[in-house]
Image 1 (cartoon, rainbow, N blue to C red):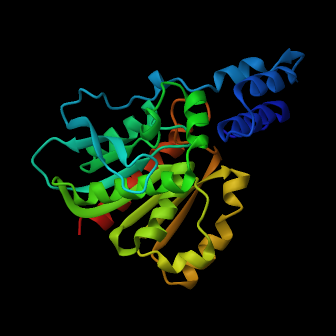
Image 2 (tube, rainbow, N blue to C red; image 1 turned 180 degrees about the vertical axis):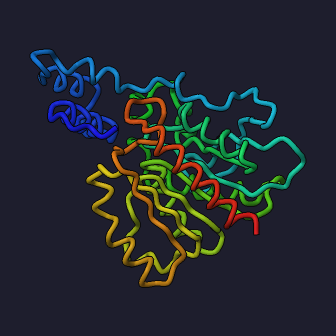
Length: 295
C-alpha cells in the first residue's frame, strides 16, 4: 500500500535508506523513534519493516514438484574464483529453460530462494547464486549480509553473476535458453547481463533495478520486461532514458508500473509487499519467460 501519512511515509523513506546501506540499523531505529504519529513514536512502524522470512515461503523446499540442491561451480575472475548457488529443477527429466534469479544487496536470503522455487514450479531450471559465497555465504541476517556485499569488489561480484548465468545456460538440465530476473541490486544486474551477454540471454525481467547507460542499450539482444514500483524515485529517475534508448534501437521490450507500490513490493517478507501487484508482476514474468524461452 502506498503510504500517505507524512510521518509514516518518512519512516518508509528511512527504511529505503537503510536497505540501500545509506544508514545502519541503529540510525534507522533512532531516526524513526524521533518521529511521532498522534503523539506516539513511529518506532513500532520501523520495527515492523524488518523482514520476517517465515512469511516469505510460498513453496516448501520439500515440495514434490521440484528438486532443489546447493551447487558449487567455477567463477574465473570473480571474487574468489568459485561460486555457490541454489539450483532448483522441476520434477521430471528435462531439459528445461533456465532462469537466473538474482538477490538484492544482501546475499541469498530465504525470500530469493523461495522465488527460485516458484520459478521451478513454473517449469524452469532456476539458479539463485549467492554473491556472498566468496566470503562465506549469506550470514543468516540482512544487516551483516548488506555489509558483506558492500565490501566486495563490485566488478568481480557482477562477474560472479555473469559466470553463474553461463553455468546455468550450459547445465546438462538446461535447453540452452536463458532468462534472468532480479530485485533491486539484482534488477540492475539483470540489465547488466542483458548488455554484457548480448544474444546469449534470451529474456530479462528486472524488478525495480537501475537502468544501464543509454550508450550500452544497443548491445542488448534479450527481450526485456521492466517492472517498476510507482513510488521509487531513485530507480524511476533512470526510466525515461532507458525506454527511449530501447525504442530508438528497435529492441523488444515492455514496461510495467504498479500503482500504489513502493520499492520492494514483490518481497513478501516485509510490509512493503503489495500482494495484488506482486502476483500480477510474477504472472507477467512467467508468461514472458514462457514466450521467449520455450520457442
